[in-house]
Length: 63
Image 1 (tube, helix red, strand yellow):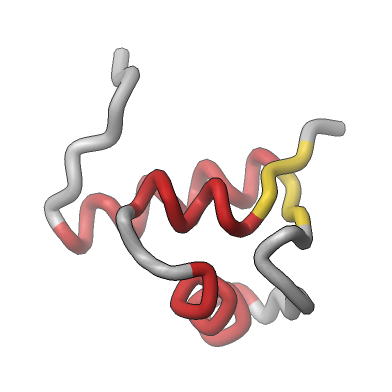
Image 2 (cartoon, helix red, strand yellow):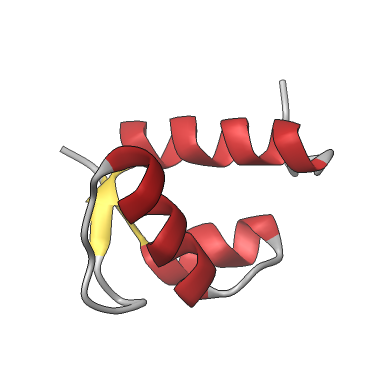
């Protein structure tokens, strides 16, 4: 099972690890302790795609 670090999710979205941590807790009930914590890749992908769409962010490496 692949995992992604919180700080990488934050980099992709152009935001802070603290904001990603707060949003994961609020929207998904996922608690992480630090920017180096990991989440499952599938969860990260859904989170990033939804947030990017909400904020009008174009993600690199699209289809």
